[in-house]
Amino acid sequence: MRFLTTILTFLLATAIAFPQVTTTARLDGTITDPQGSAVPGAEVVVTQNATGQTLHVTADEKGYWALPSMQTGIYKVTVTHPGFKSATNGTVTIDAGVPATVNIKLEVGAVTETVEVTAGADIVQTTTATVTSTLQGRQINDLPFTSHNVTELIASQPGTQNPDGVRYATINGLPQTTINITIDGINVQDNATKSNPDGIFNAVQARTQAIEEMTMTTAAAGADGSGEGAVQIKFVTKGGSNTFHGGLYETNRNSAFEACYFFNCLQHIAKDRINLNEYGFTLGGPVVKNKLFFFESFEFFDLPQTFSESQMWLTPAAANGVFTYNANGAVNTVNLFSLAAAANPQLPAADRAFPTSPDPILAKTYALINQLTNAAGTLSSRVATNNDYNRNNYSSNAKAVNNRKFQTSRIDYNLTEKHHLNFVWNYQVNDRTPDGLNLEYAILPGTGTQLGSNDLEGQIRHQLDR
Image (cartoon, rainbow, N blue to C red; front, side, top):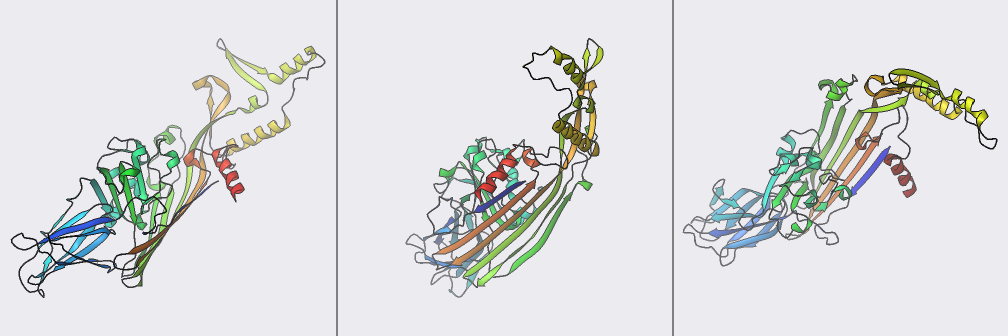
């Protein structure tokens, strides 16, 4: 049995104890009048639509304003100045680590008049040459892929090459060691296998129902992230808002609706068993309106499986010492124990005699092997294919269990207008018995894993550590 528990250490927005990749972004802009001249002293109010958090800033003598560290989300920008109509843009999107610029042109009029900007306002990236692509909530849920692991969507991003699967993908031809994957600023890769190549395998998985956004930076990353790798893949967890939201869900993938795999059909064995159930719930909302919010996601992953396995075992005759061989086209049979009995009288008196019957322990073992191989799986002769008279090929679909749990909890607290605190907790359990994913199989159907396998060593280490 393989038991893996991974805890993602909590993230505090004000903490400096852990090296992090920035998941916030800069929002700035310039305020001008109808002739294009700067409007110094214009009041800019930025409000996050989901949480109601409000930030204030005043344009300088050049009409320029900036907020350097904005959480991801959708914001409303409102600009006011005496002698001009108020201007509002309610659809400003901030992505992780991607600066945004909102330039607004004010119209002459009373402050009590409001101009709603629904198109035409510039929301551009003018301060960096960084190349990024972003997937957000609805896209993450609607794009087709085989599981709830958002990491698979990396395959859909420009510059990704993944001929052997997303896990082994490269981006823009760069080595996998240049890829850095984070959730809320904390690296979540299995760095022990990062150069295996297995650089896109995460020790903590990003799950669709818990992730709000995925941003991939592939060129000219800024100083806030390039020190961790040339390619930055940033996941941001969902958070609560001023409205309660939640849901229940279940996804089922069943082999009853799939074709037989090529090698299963070739060996005349049953289809691999797949009955994947992924189900869970999400819930988020306010604790204190505009101030304190929570989000909780819990997902179960239940996958009873079978894994195709091929082995070779002695024939019953060979297990009892009767071997067959081909010599110059003639098939001969010899009893090794009879040869041993005939040779014993020739041995010096001090030498131990050759055994003349099967060892009782081995005999019992081979009897059990014959019982198990006849009860399940398929035995086939190796004579025609390998000129092997003493071993049979054995194929089986070993049953396995793959159960996982994924929990994500998040708390957001707006301490002041300029200070924001968040706490993120990811707890994931991975229980596989036997661990066919890592080629650790049962010796035979109904038995345990192989002695000395990584799986068994892991169990021993786990017991000792406890």
